[in-house]
Length: 234
Image 1 (cartoon, rainbow, N blue to C red):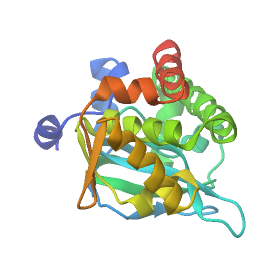
Image 2: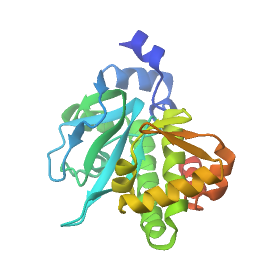
Image 3: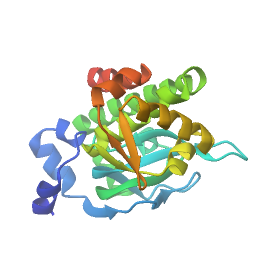
Image 4: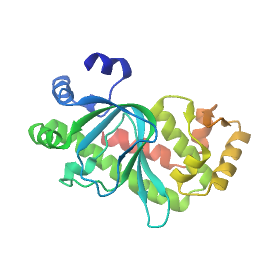
């Protein structure tokens, strides 16, 4: 597994551990493929596995009764899926869906619980990350209430860009609308505005970013706030 893992990349969260601690932790994981559209969990499911993406993107989604799911946050190689287990809660609060195919380190929940009890340094790093997610959830709640759709769309595209390290994002307008919790016509209008500013183009189910700095300028302040939170806490 180590050769394949080195070839495709690593998880930034686990990279914060010492080499010895990280190697022992990864030895208890298996490297698995995660595929576009795959539902890794639903609300209320018992947690059986923890995921640390090394390549690929997972969305953490919440639904209000009678409405579509909307994205709480995106998880790439900067984080992990199933932080609630850190607090002793083994039930998943949200749906988790793969938004970009790739790979993840997967560990059985029982072994993960043992690991965080045996490794204080690991527990400290992961609890800091839980604080990051808590701040992100609060930020997006305020964002959805106060910021314009065009600004929120720019932020979402930047989040995809950061986690995929690619200027081309394979996603449809329907998917973007669902992730933002709005109608497709709203996304079409917002995306059209970004295209007229020559920041992006939209072709055959893909968004291509042409001006990353321009997109950052259009994005709401929540994008930079998330980055600062991650850097300061982690």
